[in-house]
Amino acid sequence: MSAAMIPFIDLKSQYQALKPEVQARINRVLDHGQYIMGPEVRELEERLEAYTGARHCITVASGTEALLISLMALGIGRGDEVITTPFTFAATVEVIALLGATPVFVDIKPETCNIDAALIEAAITPRTKAIMPVSLYGQLPDMDAINAVAARHGDIPVIEDAAQSFGAEYRGRKSCNLSTIGCTSFFPSKPLGCYGDGGAIFTSDDALAQACREIRVHGQSKRYTHTRIGVGGRMDTLQCAIVLAKMDRFEREVELRAQIGDRYRGLIQAAIGNAPAPSAEDVGSPLQGLRLLSCINESTHVHAQFTVACPDREAVAAKLAAKGVPTAVHYPIPLHLQPAYAGLGPATDAPISEWMSQYVMSLPMGPDLTASDQDRVVQALVEATA
Ligand SMILES: *Cc1c(COP(=O)(O)O)cnc(C)c1O
Image 1 (cartoon, rainbow, N blue to C red):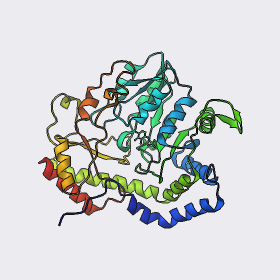
Image 2: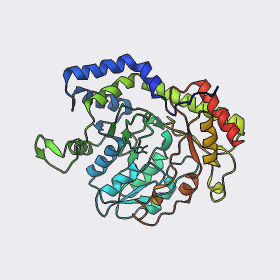
Image 3: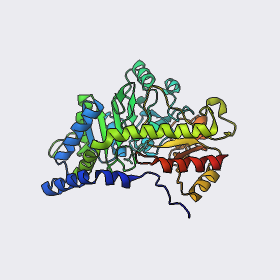
């Protein structure tokens, strides 16, 4: 008997667990009929303000829109530079380029695939208008070091792309409340997902929050008074209602994600021994053997992805697929090598991003991954990489 395919991210079990809450919330919206900017929008924003500790939450149409509106609120445009990582989803950089600004890429640490804070200072110029770290896979980069270098250079705004890290903490403070602005996504497969597109901006700066609220609705300070150029960037009431229903289970899911991540690490380590995470010394020669990435002490990890470094990735992925274990690659080509972005900005020196992009492989992950499915994943992985 060939075993059934394990879901890469199991959204069905989550829905089963939350069905009455989700349906009640959806029905309430259908009954009141305020599909745009209905009461659930502000209710969710208040809930997320309380959850993160940020003074303001502004829900928006997607994580991409959250990043775009944040840059617009900071007045970033042509001639400005934004420092970020090339080892991320394209949306991070797309919004910089859309506004006519220039992405300046800083390389990552091989242990975590997050931006190397020690390399940021050398990339700052008088045109640097924001620093945009990404909390990749669900843990934070070294936010204290990033905020410190931003402060030393005239308080450059720091925008955390927290699309993958909602629920994670850094030194006891929640992701999205660690810098000038935090942006997250409620894309269904993210740690806190809706059933469509959605996202949110977090800030404790009153003026920036006001700017984001106005830009979200076509730059209106009041109806038909267009104070600034904006976008149609609202999150709809139904999606806000769905996130509200999911909030009741979210803290538990964050705990489960940490436990399942720890269990993965324990099982894989037991099979491969205490091999260290990939380090700068490994870069340049081919990776030898399967390796775990690091969890840093300062941050908790919500494992939006559980990602390992794996030689012969395509062959290993094919062997896993044959055993019903799906995998994914986040991300196969760093953005400074993508056709759309290769010509923008100063020449990029990102050997670690280029090296890691050959090896990263994400395994099935989620709060509802069962121990038996997880055992199957690890067994298949260990056999395929032996
Ligand atoms: C998913 C994601 C985004 C975009 O979020 P959407 O809601 O899909 O627009 C941006 N940045 C990162 C790092 C992401 O993972």
